[in-house]
Length: 224
Image (cartoon, rainbow, N blue to C red; front, side, top):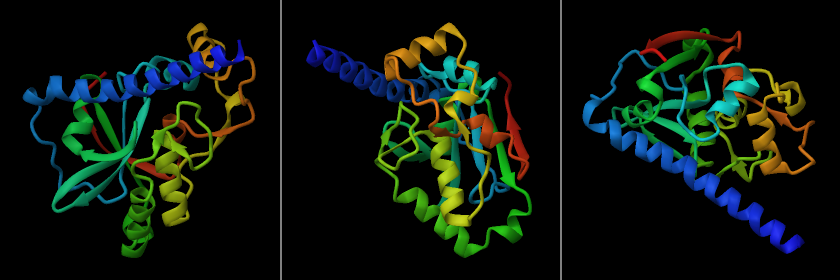
């Protein structure tokens, strides 16, 4: 019976990972023909970008965090092109236009560290990019744990800033601090944790990062 239970859990985790990645790829392919390339000379390395994704867990994240933002990434310019480092399956970097096309209605919002020009010098930007690059290829963490084996989106951007710039963009919370009362959230938690959810595990949500008092909004495109 235990062997069967573990098989079911493993199968569910595998399907969740493939489904999350599939949503990102299908959304981009379906919108690619109608979306122009996204360029903006006013973006800065290290800018944070937020959207509401169409992933299977997006609705649960919105309910638990009371936020429209369910996915985020970090911008770096490479060879004159803006790339978004994001934690999906796996952690990767994609062109900005691909990232924005994968969100609901093409909506996104960009926020920046206050006084970024003075706080984020070249050495800190390089350290942040190194912190992001070394995590490329890691699996997506559907359990939202705080270890380094796997990553989820807001964990990635928080750790990139903390490690590369010694800045905490957003306040971490315990799992129990989120709203876990909705039937959908309860269902997903049972699927992933059984009867023993790690309620004291540190977490950071896209909304926790977004509402950091250290950030200001520099661009908003579209509506949900």
